[in-house]
Length: 121
Image (cartoon, rainbow, N blue to C red; front, top):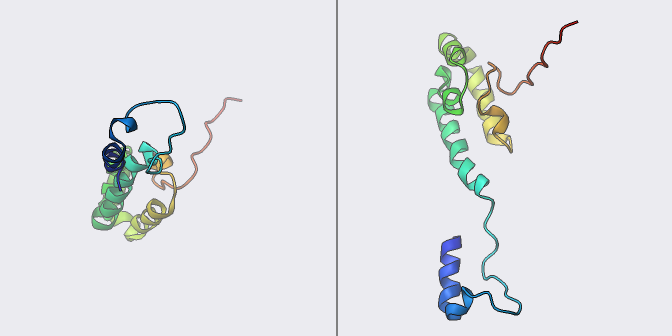
């Protein structure tokens, strides 16, 4: 049951008392809604996975997640590393909890750790 439906049910059962902030304990009928970030990011995961399966050899999922232009060109020239890179990317997209490291990733291997910046001697 969605959050809006819970509010409507509570309003119907309790009248205007559900909207009022009166004294006394008030227990919501519905559990708290999950964080908006998880609801917003799951379609992103789904779209990226579908692109990785359908057009992964051309790097479409990497374009969707945001990357430098050279990465999809490399994917296209090598047909996604002969089909291996999109499969590895798909595994990481499916089984990684947070997609933040993959958004805007400029590396060819999006799961590799970035190199630390070079420091002058």
